[in-house]
Length: 177
Image (cartoon, rainbow, N blue to C red; front, side, top):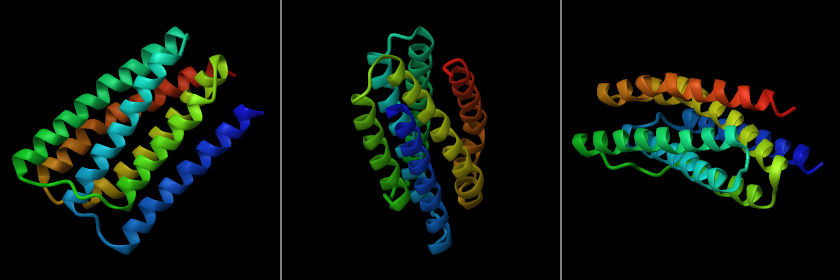
């Protein structure tokens, strides 16, 4: 039952995050500093979840995936920070970046309550939902609103990796049913 509740919570969080992106889109066009803050927040959230999962899971496949999330998302954040430093753009917190951070904290708090297979399933289910949400944001908000060509190019460059993460998470998810 907890697993079903966890999945429902993740779906609700995903819907809320998607709505936050949509609302921010309607309210005002995202600026490059806001996009930078969203990119950093999104990657940091997945790094934190990956570190937590890698330290808690006993499932080799889940551990390998979590470690990959830490490695890949740390690298994206490094590239993003280098770019915004070069461009002299200071990331600007916004409702979307704040929502991502809050959702990440809630996810880890939820995961802390779970053990063994229930933990693994909740972590992987969240990764599927999270990467779907991030891809939607990249396609519908971040790339279309990025004004700086280098920032847009970075987003376009990392998109296939995010899509690959989603497919990998879906594969792991399919083995857990």
